[in-house]
Image (cartoon, rainbow, N blue to C red):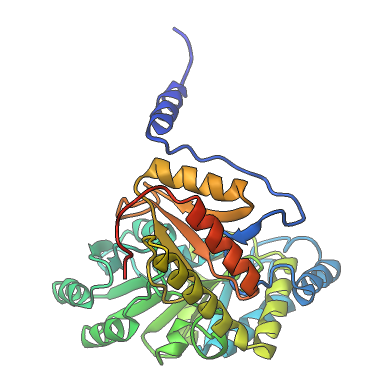
Length: 386
């Protein structure tokens, strides 16, 4: 008998190809060749000299890697400075830096929930939240998107420790969660609220302090936030922010923190450099939102199914997965990089282009991008989505 334990992979690959759902890696060069509306560099800081210089200096001073887990050799004075800076900027008592935003969500959910507890999760939440719910071993109730009443109903049916979790800005369509209403529901049920502010930091709130600060929830006893350093801050890594006792609990119990190598010093230094730029240039947050509004209004006026953005993500819906892939490829061939979301990455099964409204885009670049997207659009007679 032949030994072929991975033959099943070939069958799955054929199925993906038949459905038009094959993913491929496309390495980019060091120098930008395309107009970038695909990355998450919302504030245009990833190449800013203050950011890259801070990353390089951190690597020279502290080494290329953290050398170990945070509880062994992986914590440096740089990590502590970044944690203090993030907590102060976003309005929380304390912060804990991890190797990625994904790890931050896994750490928060697995440490704050467990057997016998309940997590109420929005149907549109990011995959890292979905995985965190699974790993927590808590009972998980997935409720309709952006529906505080459904959250209240789920919490009301549970007797014991509970936590509601939501993205602040959803990465698929760029719509904002009803955070104030969710906080009221959680307070009434004596439940915690966990907010993933990956797409809010740097874009929402006074000077980009994030969605919890914008809604007056930052620093609340029952509120914890996670964020990533890889979007508005142009670096890499993640963090959990909240009351000091919550952060101390994570240090002692969160496996994605305890057993993972600490964030590389260069990433910590780069994030600190970006945080300094944001403090000095708070207008960047408003500029990112203005670019998003301009992209939306012009694309919708051209008859495309653009979704009104609440932050810096602009979604433009396509008639099919195949059409979305072809549309993105045509945009790329015309010199503009756009994101392409399709099943199974989108919970509603609707394929779309995903555009990043960067604060450093010029008027000429916005005009060129809109012209390219409109010119390459697949035929569709649907009205714009409001």
